[in-house]
Length: 103
Image (cartoon, rainbow, N blue to C red; front, side, top):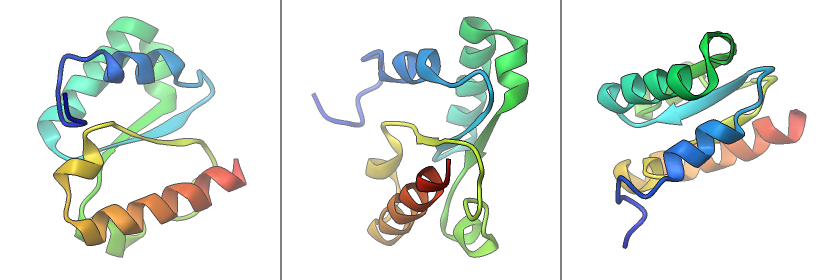
């Protein structure tokens, strides 16, 4: 099994662990964004969905600073790093570390 396998329960476990006070979840495409948002709603409810921002992150999003200066935990879906180019992966890993140190 690879890190890109769906249906392993990793996204569900991530959603169950989301803080109710707010977070940012990073995914790699719009289909997964909608899937994660629906799963948050179904599993954790509307209040946690309202407190959670689910973003698609790619090279242009990094340039716009979408992950810079976040004051809530930033969580990356397990398949994200395998689905993006290595330069995006490295940048996102560093930004997530920097953001999560501030929380």
